[in-house]
Length: 246
View 1 (cartoon, rainbow, N blue to C red):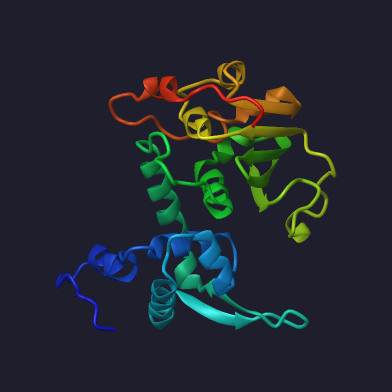
View 2 (cartoon, one colour):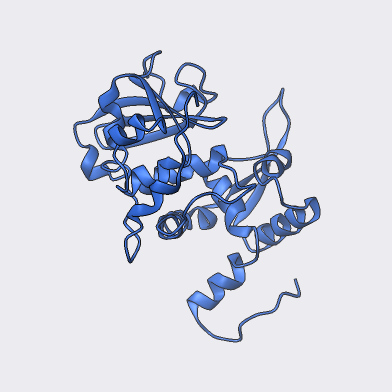
């Protein structure tokens, strides 16, 4: 398709050729959550120009990472989904996300959390070995984004929406109607996962509120974990102002 190549016979160089263009990895991130219509992708990637999204999807189709599928009636919508080859990128995407989160810092003006980015963050930072024997249903609200995380003996399922209104009930049909805890928070979530602030300290500063089982917040930083960045960033949370009524 006329793209510039690196001119090296190397797996990494080929991977960069396939997914290294601007926006491509974020498209793949969102499709790892599930199939999407063009309008769904456009809405989740608010700053991507329509023509760029179209071009990237065509390239991903041509390279065998993405395919189009028509949903059964009555929907009949066309969705984009990853092929098996495309889904093989999951661990690489998760690893890059964890690595980038270590030095993420505070959100810049105009930066937002999306549903797919939050779902991906929880899936990427989940430590199954630390969740053995744990059964917990947590509704997590970060600004306007709401997701539900179900942990069942080391297995995680994260879905869009609250615990009682999830769109895809087939992923957890036996889930209870009410969550064990409803957690409201904001940018401090990254610091919680990195162990830079404890849930109790975040709650005391108004950066986190919880309804239900308050002990459920202990999963942040223990079951969901971001490794500390080189040269400790523990002072980061001192720059986050206290917030109330999130």
